[in-house]
Every structure is written in structure tokens, then in C-alpha cells.
Length: 237
Image (cartoon, rainbow, N blue to C red; front, side, top):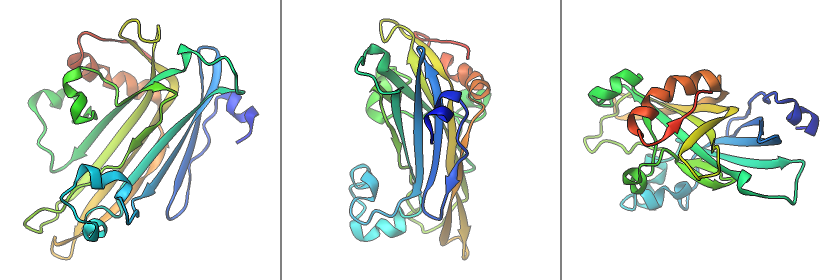
């Protein structure tokens, strides 16, 4: 993608092949240009299943194909500033907020009905830290490799799983908890599970990467954020 297109602020159309999807979202933040480059591909890693061997240590390597292959692996990398600058700063601090929704098959808590089934996607260790960020840091990447293990009874349930990922900043680089969306930087992705052969086998289909109407979708998620994190301030887009 040329620098002129990046500076213009228009998103590059998603490209895909049978194994890889790619999407570039240019942005402007703190009067500097940047971009996020996202890739989405099926899990085919025979050695570590893109790290799922750490999340599910009881799944043997010989079962990776059955349990993990075909699920999506998403990675998003930030380039900021454009053009490159030696003057790196606290302005390079960003956070990723991700929401997920799975249906059917998910038991949705009563207070989640008001939020259309969306919930926060946070690492388990961080849930008691009361932070909305899945990732936070200096030009942080975002990574996710969701999977659903086969039921012990061998049955397969249909499932539609979707994620929305938003790039954010803290207005004063972390001095207070005022969260602001980076304009235009939100994307959606996910997967579907379809039972077949009398519900003992499954097809996994990765949904396409899509640029969200970030301001609209962010506004729709503000109620959930404000309910879950009352000590934080989430600004309108």
C-alpha cells in the first residue's frame, strides 16, 4: 500500500486466499499517521497450534488436527508513526479492546441480554484487574486464536462466533482512565461451526475480515463498557 493511500485515511479492501486474509486500516492519531495490518488464517500449526498447546495442555499434539485445525488465527500489527520518526513517545501507547459473541450454544447471563450477547474478551488472569484492555502497550499487536474443543460425548453443536476489535488510546497516556477510540480503527472477524454426519463431525468456516463502521459499533458497545467498568470513562466516538 502506498504512503499516499495511507495518509488519505481510506481502508484497503480485504484480500484473501484459501489460507490467508489480509486487511490494512490506515488511521490518524495525535496528528500522526499510522496503520494497522491484520492477517487472518486457519490454524494449521502441527507443532504448537499457534500456542493453543499452552492454553489446552491436556490436548496431545496428535490431536491438534481434530481439535484445533481450521479455527482462525488473527494477528494485527501497528505501524506508527508514518513516515517513521525518531521521536517516539508516550503517544505510542495504545490499547486493544475486543468484544465477542457466540450463538447459539452460549448461556447468556441476564445482564448481557441488554448488550445483544456481546461480552468482553479478557485474559483470565486480568479479569480481577478491572481493565477493559485485551492488550495495552507501546504500539501493541493484537493476537487471538480461538477454538472449541469437541464435546466428550462426541456431539457437535452449531455455533456462530464473532469478534469486534477496536484500537483505543488513553487521552493522557495513562494518567487517568479516559478511553477514546482511534477514529476508524475497528474490524470484525470470526468463525462458524456446522455439525455434519449425524452431529459427529464438524465443518469450520472462517468469516471474512471486515472493516467496521467503527464509530457506530463503538457507540453500541459503550453501554457494556460503562456497566462493567464504572471507574473508567469511555468517550463517545
